Image (tube, rainbow, N blue to C red):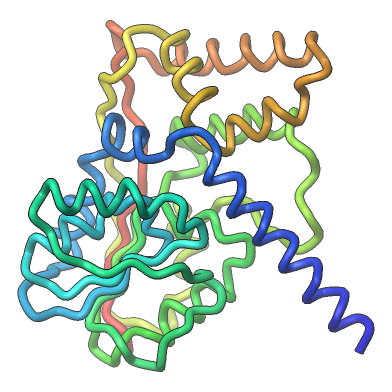
Length: 275
């Protein structure tokens, strides 16, 4: 009983930490100014349309939920960090989209089995710390024959390499927490492959032209992106390490610069049908 209680308490603490991290800065600005194209791409690939009951897991401020709702689907946007919903509601109103918003943990979804025709996540569920639990849940709430659409940063692409760059400066992860690996096709097939049909996976690139220079990228992410803010807070009292991370992120951006600050950020898009 003690071990179970301790594990439960540790999981609650971890989820509280994740919620607080994604509430830092201004993630909606990242969603609308940098990665806005990803949501519509995921919605189109998953074949969402009028009459579909859609669940968006780790929806943030609605990068995929709003485009899904605009197709005529009935959409429920969920996230562990409901602080992001305020901007999402405003964006939905401005776009003329109607959808519902609900706080929910990707690893313990408060919905009945087979509740949705399509379940999607756009660079969201990939950050859940326990991958098997999150995969089990998204499959559980998808009806047989329903569609699944997942878009995740690849470990070898720009954002994956950004997390690798920040890792030495971050506190060690809690026991059992996994790094973001949903952008690895082999990993996703291990998680869901034997429970779905017609699994298709392809890598593609988001061309990002938001930042004129590497410094622009770094300063934007230092102020807007929760995980980056959290890492800098972890080393805030060590000015040498702050300077070192500044340099590492600048060099990362410069290595990926295609000219004029443009970059390609690689992602994996997976679609499948629930078996």
